[in-house]
Image 1: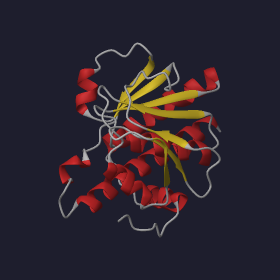
Image 2: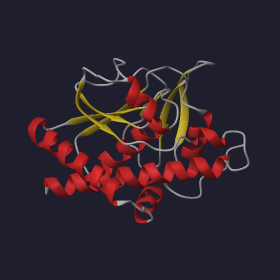
Image 3: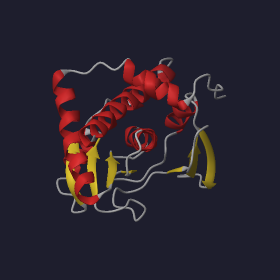
Image 4: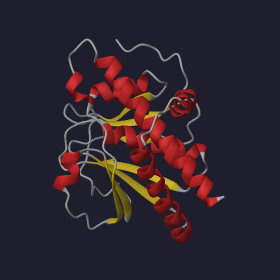
Length: 210
């Protein structure tokens, strides 16, 4: 049974940033992304971010969710999406780790294989729509800036015609902890890392546009 969240989404988001530890290489990468995204915002007045991993079930879903939260928090005209090179499902452990930090999930379209979720939290103005899909699904607005979150997706998508820009921001797949005693903590660690790095990225974008 999923535990009731004892922390709000915004509190978790900010704490993840404050506890974030980045190598110089990772910081440089995030800053280069911020520079490119801020330039896109200056030019087009909007930016679409598409987080891509192979199965669109864990890391890319977390990227989409936290980028949606960041866009609202930093008041930036950025839309976030996610996709994969294969369709599977929004993994139940990804759902659970987001529920634990304050997100509410409601089934929008039922499916045994790949349900569509409406994801909200206490300060939501609009729901996040979450389900597994191919990276060029019609719901993913184009053109977009592609952000690959796993090495497999980066290698299997050598060319993405819809991508105006492309960055590789890999995270360790928490899948390795499935059905182990460490599963909850590993997913929470991944959740925290992605939240913290997305916060850092959007904070840098906001400062560049100031």
